[in-house]
Image (cartoon, rainbow, N blue to C red; front, side, top):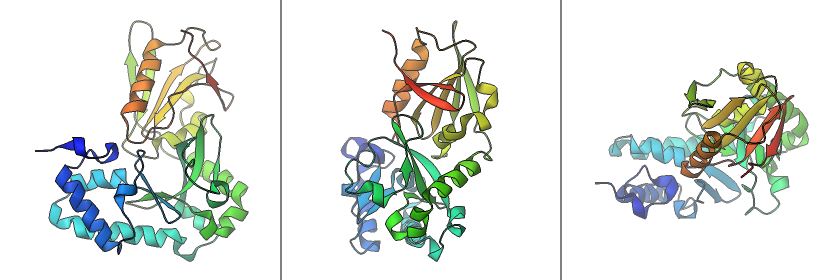
Length: 274
């Protein structure tokens, strides 16, 4: 029987015993370098100038036979090791291994000299668009000090990664309705889902009304949208605000509890009138 109370929030997919076994295997196979007890509440392991997303990998292990765990962990560590130096690739060849991820604006608050270590910009208020390396089983924050050519071409890197985002396939859309509101729920298991907000109108032009859109990005898996036919209203949808708050609080990878007015490719943070 599962007992998740003893596990961190991000490891709730594992039983307490499985969590301890994962920790033991990871320490063993990394020669003591990776200790998941140092993982933050956001499911990110910050150690030795690396920031590793570990929550999704634990979710994968929860659905994998225990006798296959050593091989899965070994492969995961190999991908991380290969990706860290981008297999020796420099700009622009390294772009094929990179993507943009959205982080909450306080994501690097515990890092020293974060602006020199990582490539990020605030393209949406209260969030950070950040360059990451995306492998098949691993996503982690690019360490720019180990890839100086990418740091030197930061503007070009962002321009090209944003252009690449514009070519992505839209995620599934589900419409939620009550007597007053229709809300589009864009949701996917892909942890890169929220990054599509960076090029929202290029991927979801049908969700932008004459007055723009009311948008929230509560977590990495979700974008909420309400089309506006007129200018942003003063009394915002209670359903939209409540759903945003719940999806922000309950997810392992929260981004922002804020609401935004999107219009003319610009996000403006708004306040709810109470």
